Amino acid sequence: MKKINLIFATLVLLVTFSFSALAQTETKIGGLIAYGTEVENIGIGANAEFPIIDKLTISPSFIYYLPKDESGVKINWFEVNANANYYFLDEETIGVYGIAGLNYSSVKVSYDDNDFGFLGDFSASDGRFGLNLGGGANFNIGGSITPFAELKYVIIDGGQLVVAGGVKFRI
Image 1 (cartoon, rainbow, N blue to C red):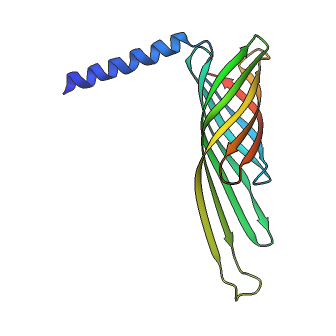
Image 2 (cartoon, one colour):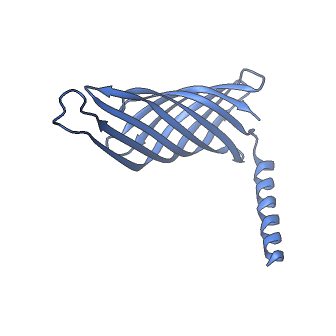
Image 3 (tube, one colour):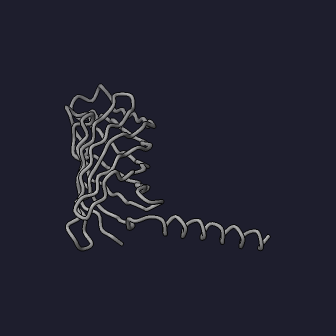
């Protein structure tokens, strides 16, 4: 059993190093500010970019939209994304890429009846899976910081256009 685990671990390391050797980009981790058209609010988040092969990276991200309170109804929304970025243009000053991936969005709506007392309190939440399609650009300014901008459409029930920008740090 130990030999099988050792062989499996060795194969995983070999595959990982092989893909890393083929990739031209570096691993990056960063933060972002976003705006979602369906939630109609600003969000803050984190993202990363891991090279897989030449011109292809895996880019997970998380966006938490600031809570909203509309007439006593509180709305909390977040999304988790697992994207693949394909670089069409990767020059010294700019890297332009297409985005395709999976999205999980969660919305929680709650109401606290503090004013009248007879309506009662309620809350409901829902989570949905969707698809991401879009594009982005990294602006290589030198050093270890890379500003970026992205525009993606989340194909989900109501659909949502998300505009995001931030910085990625090379590690």
